[in-house]
Length: 158
Image (cartoon, rainbow, N blue to C red):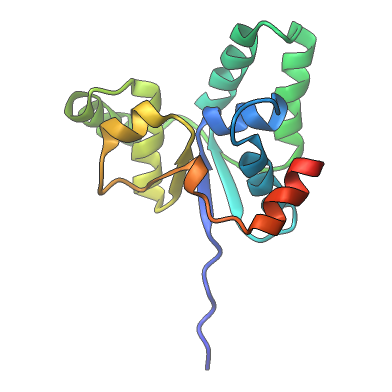
């Protein structure tokens, strides 16, 4: 009897989510491929509630979106019916340790701690964060997400 292969499950950083809306960013095609894979049920995507604030903040500081457009962008994530993790004190405690150990923000550390606890693959486009995390963290650079050349071209064309 064959054991069921577990569905890959990703926790996305807001640096990836921004690329779903602001498609002129580098590696937006890869971020959109991840979104499309979720819609085709190839993998699961999960978010932390803090990611919505971070996304709105990033879009605001791009200076290209009205408040209404930012709200629409955030609402589009809710429409995808993703699993969203609410605040958790135990994750916060682990995140505070990561803040000190890796010299990273509590926002980033919270996502990393959540990914560790839930056994998720954390995907980020934040190179500075990845350098600080180093090896041994369940983090994947967006640019390193495995994508076939044909799929990448299809995503760019959309």
